Structures are given as structure tokens and as C-alpha cells.
Length: 93
Length: 211
Ligand SMILES: [Zn+2]
Image (cartoon, rainbow over all chains, first blue to last red; front, top):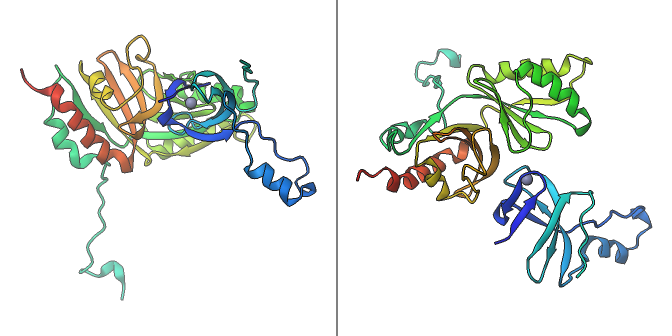
């Protein structure tokens, strides 16, 4: 079980959260300019790295806020968390 | 035919029913002061206060003056006696009062946060019917909670003054520690009250046995 550090509540059990997928997927600046392929790419296609990954978690059973978490998908080590949009410590090998 | 005078229709129920009221006798019969006790504190006034980040200082000052205590820091609650202000999340507070009605408290708080500019700097909603409050008290209370709560409740991490939302036996609860008895208050949704009280009574079993 993961121990996820909520920026407001501190380390909490994974069961208190809902997963939100990859973090920082920006909404297209001009959605009308996108063709179907590009729109589908924005909607559905996500990175799937082996290693460090910035992802979103929602603290459902706690403060009910989204936060961004840096997690190693191979080892499940968590490097840190931050409120959505705030800068998150980037981790490279 | 006028329904109001129809003698065959049963009169509507007038007495209030608390979400765990039907379990009061079983609660009273379980445990003792030297182990652990559980009881419901029904019908507390509960008002939710929501503040935009930009209005935080104005709301903290006006609400604080009305409540007689500062709005709490993350993970904490404030207030001596009544009312209590509980930190639920960023910009999200719950005010609990056992000497007021939900409507009265909401009206007073709304007036307090709206006085300055003629417009409210925070949202105030009466949510008294949403949750009921259980009190779990006694030397074994921490062990009872540990059966279903993953939070570290050791005194060095969680003590009087702490309040947080978490999971207890998979139910979302607000957990408030009042004193070093320890006395815990559990704020639980009305529809979960029956389940949670039954779970607590079961968890208390092994701690209330006479040796
Ligand atoms: Zn949280």
C-alpha cells in the first residue's frame, strides 16, 4: 500500500485517495484548431514511463483537494507532492 | 374532504430522531469509564464555512471575532467550550456548536462574514443534518480506533487540538481529539451512523471484558 504525502494533511494511506492519472496535461489553447486525431491524443493518450512520473491524486477521504505527486512507477517510491500547479521537485535518476 | 381533519390519517411524527438514537441502549450497556465508552451527542449545530483564497484574511478576522476563536490551522481545531471551529481542508471549515441551532448559527456567522462590505466574503451553509457526532472516551479508546483507522494516533502525532478527515472502518469520518482521556469525537454521515456504531461496539468488545 502506498503512503501518499498530501500537501495539507501529511502522509496518508492510498485508500484515502483516488488516482487521477498523469499530471500537467495542459488544456489545448485553441481546442477548435485541433483535428480529431489531435483531440483524441489530448483526451486519451498519456505517458506510461517506467520510473519517475508526475501524477495526480485526489484526497477523497481527507481535505478533498487534488495534488501532484512524483512517484517512481517501478519501485513505488514517492519523492514529494505539491498542490496542483505548484512546482514539484523533478526527479531524474 | 379536508385532509387536516381526517381522523383516520396518522399524525406526523414530531419528535426528532437522531441517526444513532436506536442504538443508545446498547452503547450505554457497553464498556465503563475505566475501559472505554461510546455515546452519541445528537443534534449539534454544524455550519460549513467556505472561503476563497483571496478572502482568507477577511473571513478569518470576521468569523474569528464572531466565534471568539481564530480559524484553525491545517489539521487542527480551535475554540474553548463552544463553538468549535474545525479545519476540514484548505479554505474549508466546520463550525460545531452545542448551544445553538444550525439555522441560528448559520445566520449569525453569515451576518458576521457579510458585515464589512455588505457582501459575504465566505459561503455559510447549515449542514447540521448531514452528520451526527459520536464520542468515544476512555483509556482504551485509541486501541478501539486502531482496529479500523490507519492514522497514527500516538500522542506525539495526534493529540488534543487535532482534527482531521480520514477513514474509520472504510467510512469517511471527521476525527477530533478533545482531551487526554483520551476523548475522541467522530463526525459521521447520518446514513453511516448505524453501521459505524455497530462496528465500534464490536471493536470495543475485547477491550471491555472484565478480567
Ligand atoms: Zn489532504
